Image (cartoon, rainbow, N blue to C red; front, side, top):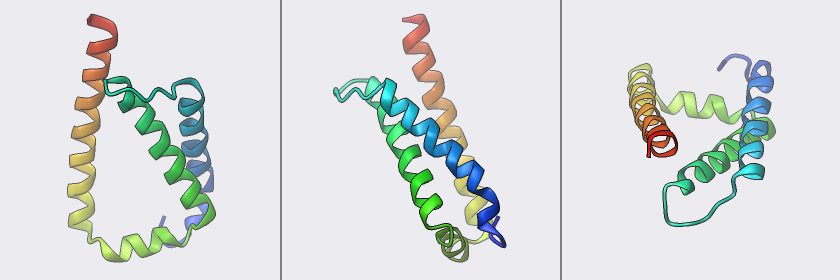
Length: 95
């Protein structure tokens, strides 16, 4: 990914479009649990747009972060998003 960031334009386009779809269907700004979905949509759309417009930024981020930091970041982010997803499912389905 670092060697040729342009090859991942489809991934960033998918992330951007998914974020825009979430924003279009769920743009709720209340201080309650729905704001988590709205924020995730805005974050996805922003990140997708930034990497589509400036793919060279990926190389700059990769230079700053070592492999150990990236592995830790991905694990922490994975756990956080899994817990957040479980809480949202619990809130929407069970309660």
